[in-house]
Image 1 (cartoon, rainbow, N blue to C red):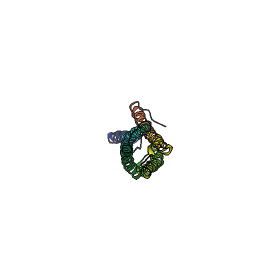
Image 2 (spheres, helix red, strand yellow):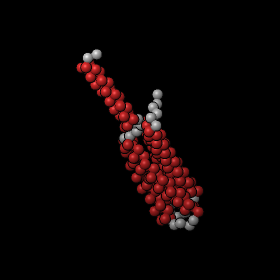
Image 3 (tube, one colour):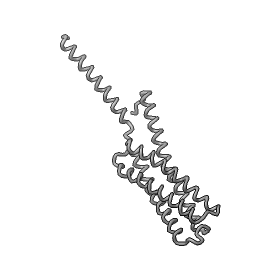
Image 4 (tube, rainbow, N blue to C red):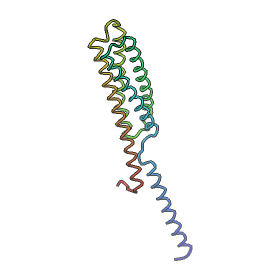
Amino acid sequence: MSTKRAVFVLSLAFLLGAFLSVSRALRAADVSGDSKEVTDLLGQAKSEALQLQDDAATMESYTQSNMSWQSHAMKITEIKDHVNTLGQTVGKLTAARGTASLWQQTAIDRINPILRELAANVEATINHLDKDRTHPLQSTAHKDYLKANAELASRMATVISDFVDYGDTKTRFEDLSRKLEIAER
């Protein structure tokens, strides 16, 4: 074999090796296919949902005390504001759905109906308070609204938290797989 041909073959082998190495690194960098924007928005939604869950549980506890109508009105307004803030975040999630990975799309699809139901129930609670300002706090209907708000807020927080935990675990698994050089076949 001539020297030129040997140099050519070695150069070609080197280039092929470099290409495969770069190609493997690029695949590893994009293995998850998860959208960073959606991951960040899910984390934000989780924080908002946990705050909403806490406030809804606090308000439900008001049924066990002699809180004034005004205290109930202030707390439900605070909860409504939390629902609206969460709604804005979920709106951004929905807008980013096209760039989301499959599990992120599933998260968005599961969050939306719970949020709609929670928003409708919070609105019904507000309407109930506005309708009867004399004795609404002791009514069964009022207690049912508050219980439903607490349950829906808890379900929302759980669903979002579970998806965020899944994403974190998936990322850790993928990082460890790359570290150990375990390739899926």
